[in-house]
Amino acid sequence: MFKPVIPFEPISRDTLPAGSQWVAQIKWDGVRMLAYENGQELRLINRRLHDRTTQYPELVQPRNLCAGASYILDGEIIALDPETGRPSFYHLLRRDRMSKPDNIALATHQIPITYMVFDILFYDGNWVTNQTLSDRQQLLHQVLHTSPQVQEVTNAPDATALLHVMRQHHMEGIVCKDLSSTYGIGGKDSRWQKVKIMHDLYAMIGGVTYRDGIVNAVAIGVYDGPHFIYIGHVGTGKLNMNRWRELTSQVQPLIIKERPFHNVPERSAETTWVKPAIGLKVQYMELTHHRTLRHPSIQTFADVTPEDCLANQLQHED
Image (tube, one colour):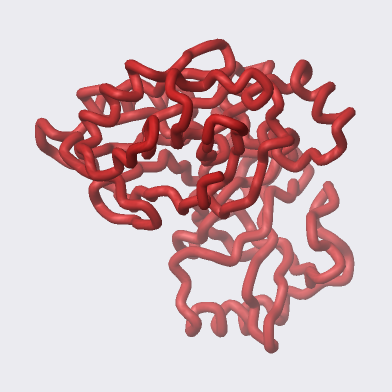
């Protein structure tokens, strides 16, 4: 069998690249997965080189992803939210973390998945990673066996227009790729560039956690009527160590014994509760099924009131 490889990764950008050699693709909100077929068996390996073959039997049992006897495909496995029809990382993780055969067999019907294939690294005894993306895509189009479970990711020539559509549909973002580029196994550079769609909101701090006596994360909330609702812990963003030290001093007189949140936060046992008096501007990707923020980061402190920190800031994510 093939020795698994670490896939090529895009770098993050806030702006879109310019030039006729660039195409854009939807950034699917799933799990990166490479499919390895050597003529005897098909294995599914994620980007951390963990084997996920047993988790997705509907892709493995037919062993007909591609026309060739041997190949390596690169793509993303996604699961759709039955209510919104959008890719759901929450539903996909439920599949990806299953290990019991009975549960997996049941999940193939309850949580159907699709393998969104966007590249090919090896075909019929030959590595094709040194070919241009344009040539690899042409080969992939010729040999990929599409089905309800296997789809080919298509190119969009206008990245700006695609990003606009992704915003309208509350999707994760787009990936821009240079058609003249080769595939860099284990690499990460500007030949592929991802632009994620992020959202901002105002929230209040209702709790903190400490490391070595300094605040290292905050529990934040918004107001839904009279209730202060927990929406997540956040410890990343644009605050430097001096700002964390200042925050440690700021929250000291605000410490209270009772939980200020109406709901029970994650990590409650390690959280010190504080009176909601310090506002933040937070950036995040989406609201999870648990009604907490996915990938939140602190942008800045904000002089806001509870009226500025309302739960309806989140409604566009429903």
